[in-house]
Length: 298
Ligand SMILES: Cc1cc2nc3c(=O)[nH]c(=O)nc-3n(C[C@H](O)[C@H](O)[C@H](O)COP(=O)(O)OP(=O)(O)OC[C@H]3O[C@@H](n4cnc5c(N)ncnc54)[C@H](O)[C@@H]3O)c2cc1C
Image (cartoon, rainbow, N blue to C red; front, side):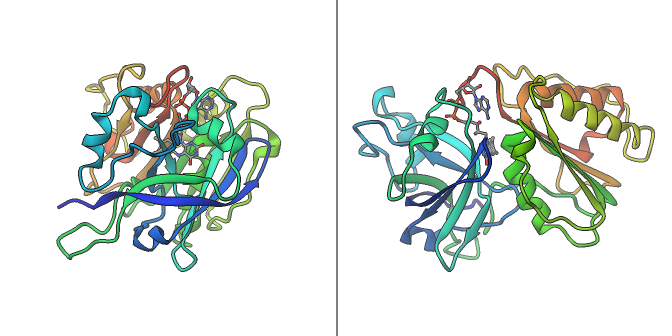
């Protein structure tokens, strides 16, 4: 059984500058009547237009991905991964919070120039057409019955963390560390009373260092507890060659659940520290490399 993924035609309904480094783009279109949202850290692909060519050769239909891969480079639209920050099915509106990181990549370039009315395509799950199809897709956050949680990430993970926070049960207990470029990039978000949310401004420090310090301090509070194993079998991931995506088994029972996403080199170091150093059981932690310094997504 699989969820049905398809290409949705949308256009920009609003562009809102949230902070110096976050831009919210609201997308709309009749096609979104068929979009299936599970919330949390649900990811989608955005398809960027090719200058002067738009979406002319973008395939549609069931095997759109195979057909897209087979296209020559010059006419294959770039795909990039983003989080559904919120979806309002009645209004057929979907928000994406983009990190504006300059003009080094097609997505960041597009968001710095996009205007109301511009066309975009997204790829995501469609509402199931029969009970045999999975109604959900592409969200990883799954704490099960964990007594306490950790959410940690850089600015690219902030949209996912905010969406997760807003969906948490009011009785949830835990810690959240979100590293953003500057003090002015903190975003308003609501969270259960038992969840402490810390926005950590880099303010010129190296990427990930300050978040790492906070996660290490948190880890010292769980070390040698019931969430720990020996970590001896951990294989490192070469984040310049492979995507770091290490997700625990959905069925595992967990005293602690951690969800960590951001720059892959930083996530790799945290994985090494938490699993091999502290001995945190891998069944307690989702490690996700959202992007890699110096590497385009594909
Ligand atoms: C599941 C998932 C969810 C994501 N959700 C979001 C989201 O909601 N919002 C969001 O902004 N990003 C999100 N990202 C990250 C986003 O996909 C990457 O940042 C992506 O590389 C941006 O594409 P681009 O075309 O701008 O740059 P690319 O063409 O991919 O890269 C070009 C250059 O820019 C660098 N680069 C890429 N991203 C950044 C960055 N953030 N800061 C500094 N340099 C960068 C690369 O290292 C490379 O050198 C998500 C990623 C994943 C896997």
